[in-house]
Image (cartoon, rainbow, N blue to C red; front, side):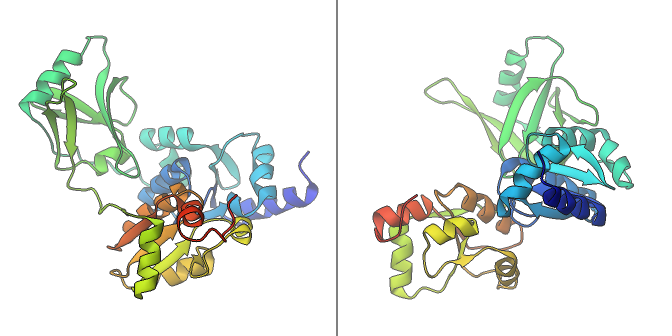
Length: 306
């Protein structure tokens, strides 16, 4: 049963924020792929929104699921109304229903210029079984690609190139202009290669021993820890700064050429944070591979493992 104190807290949060997203992380540094996708959609609409990081408060994390009768995170509220989770938000954005709910104009997306080489066209046509599905190309928040045959969806952006129709959702279409799909022969028979000029710079990997050498050599860099307060109380690297509200402000005030290293428990959450900061224009962004667990095993065994 939802405690009255938690219900009152959630009531107040939802009441005072027109558009509120309960998520893992925050709008600047989402800490899960589903939260990241919804943040990206809201940013693309241009609407103002606030976020609540459920990882910072277990009572809120568990309470909002009961409050909304919805088992997963993220969860979006607009004008006090529960809208849904990631899949619902994506569908509503594609159809224009989300824009209507937010009271904003649903601006059309221009079809991107896409090129298919001869080998790609041949492979695509050979794979089409004629069942009525269309070729879909989806581009994820971190520019992951998914090329497959599937049903046409409301709001799709269609591109016809070399006699092949390619369908994009709105988010993917905005990131696809100039994209080239090629067919590359491999020992296994061949594979598609996608080259996209819109991709941001990639996060660089940094091992625990390499980070220790940076410290020993006096290299100038900033180290940010994206873990929760509870985790940092168990194990920490003294030089690391928590990526809390104050930490985020300090980070975003740094010069764009400042070397930045992100760390977490095993390196997954920190990579997500590092990929996000690239979009803010920073150019030297690193992820501590293996996280603090690798630091404990390879550099400082005095740091507790958990």
